[in-house]
Length: 73
Image 1 (cartoon, rainbow, N blue to C red):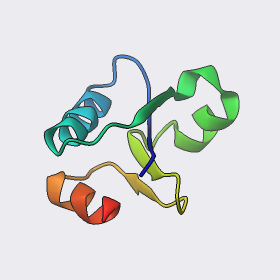
Image 2: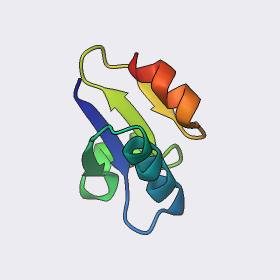
Image 3: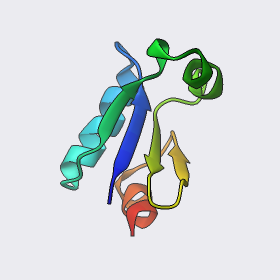
Image 4: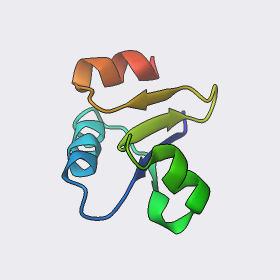
């Protein structure tokens, strides 16, 4: 399954989300929302956000390992 992690540089919550993904052995493509005005407007106050590419569903912060595992199942 392909995942995207919407985040930005120097975001400690984004680092925590990435650590949770790593903890369960999942890799996600990282997209920095600062590079795109539309993404910045959409996710600016919501990051980090994990998005499933197969169905478009999104999991916004805060989430833990259990919520992340349920999201990807």
